[in-house]
View 1 (cartoon, rainbow, N blue to C red):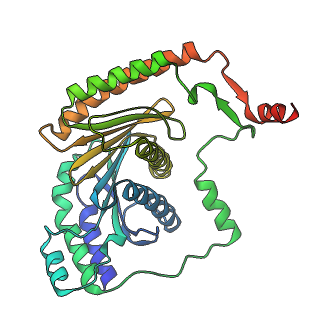
View 2 (view 1 turned 180 degrees about the horizontal axis):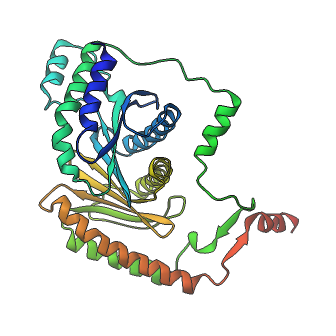
View 3 (view 1 turned 135 degrees about the vertical axis):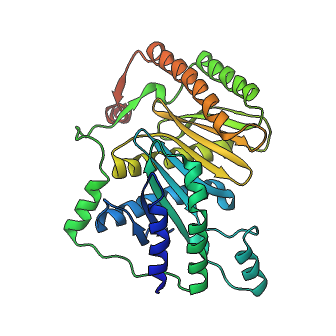
Length: 334
């Protein structure tokens, strides 16, 4: 049996787990290796693989070698990304390290889509062995799967770009929301008060921040001094890019919007949740509080933050929008 047939067999096992809809093994560069599913065409597989690769690489950039998996949740589906990475807990990795065998397994990851109501813990348990089998087959084969870039004609390129366009057609005007740049001191104080209440309710919380559209930092709170202002700004920009790209991928797959993103790392969880036109980024140590309990606590604070921001917009934004091109032109004339 060829390597691709072995991988296909393992993916089919995952595909037949109750609730799973599609499974794709992809390289970090966005090239699909093998897939199992019922409703993705060849072109859709390439498109989705490119989108999922962007998501995975953003998550990897945020957390480097600590990243274990990314979970994207929407109203109609869940999308799960897991890297096939090295681990000293895995016997085959320990043997390879001792024998000096080069392992490029971190170049690959699995993307799984499932229904929204599926028990993800059950999928983890039932797919664990299949993921180990895929990893073992890839490592022992010695194949690198670095094919030449796929070529597209002009029509295919045009159709590919259109598939990523999820916005309605509109007049080409550059508009800037005034309150996307600043909030009053009173609003910031209210946000910080909510952050402090979160720190009391979630004892293992490391840090939390709130951004507006584009990933611009509004407010932040940290229990330690390990994160600088620049670190917060970098995390805010990258996390917003992750959220924006995930939204596009979710729309491509299931025509849905993202409700939340969970990144599990070796020693902590990171939650990314949309709030108005921005996102909340919450990092929590793995300690006494369980993931299920956190999923109950966090939405309460998200609702409070949404209420504060909504009230601030009504009061603090008398001029709704202005045309930035006109403003810049006026400045230049003067």
